[in-house]
Length: 255
Image (cartoon, rainbow, N blue to C red):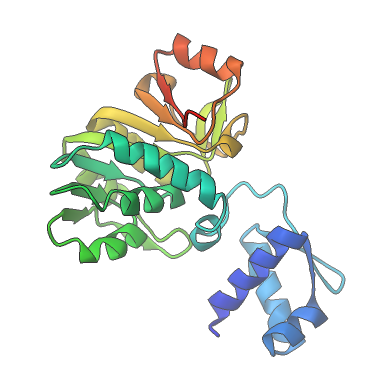
């Protein structure tokens, strides 16, 4: 097992149990306790854990977000519902942009029945997943590769995004708040999302119900930049009122 795989396993355990013990992890992964301590130190340096005597606890105040491969396995049912709604909105031969969110991976795979799509993305995961779609045009934005989020980011990424004009931009966020607006964990990700929204005729925000009433590190954009929001369940009335006020169409499963 690679060290990164072991650390991701430890992080998943932290997410479920909120704390881990060095001796137990040492036995579980068949490595020395010193190796586990180094793993926990790295997770602490990344703001994901807080070391304690004999182990570590989950950093509940982390403002930088979880690694992509952890997020990908969270709220799977909700993400699939959103992907199904998006599939009903995207038409054959359209050009779309997808961001680096875990939800976007489910969306990309949910569009496989569409014909002759052009997909522009800064998500390494999506690019790899769509290698077996030769009838599509899949365009990578380029940029600096970032391990934690499987993302391509930076000024070159934003510059390339801005050179295109597409039918739909589909982006996510980490928090929706009536006062703080649309927020995310990372400034570079937020910048890329803003550029995608500027490049599109139809600007779609996807957010499952856990994102509502949450605030992340950096503001992504104002409500005026969004034309539609797609979520996995009917929002509360205060949110429906806000969307109506902002002239944003809210789409959710009719159950």
